[in-house]
Length: 72
Image 1 (cartoon, rainbow, N blue to C red):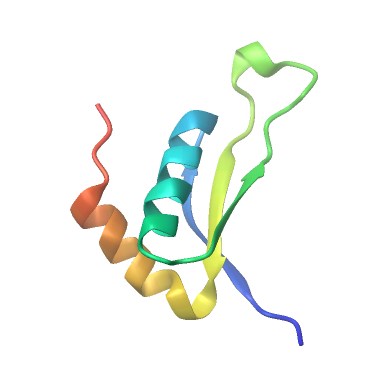
Image 2: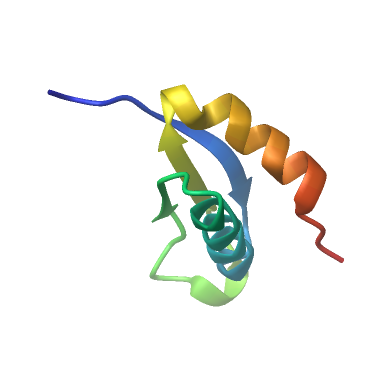
């Protein structure tokens, strides 16, 4: 059976995507980071890192990010 995944967070900073993934895993929400940055020009920051969750967890994941994630 194929499950649907949804992008809930996108950033040019890969470490932030990993922090979001860790936060979601603390709440027992399966999350994966997809790195879409150019490996040819990593210092220019072309592309984004995306955090994906299962579609049925997307709303809860977005609420968790709004209430608990703070980046400065």
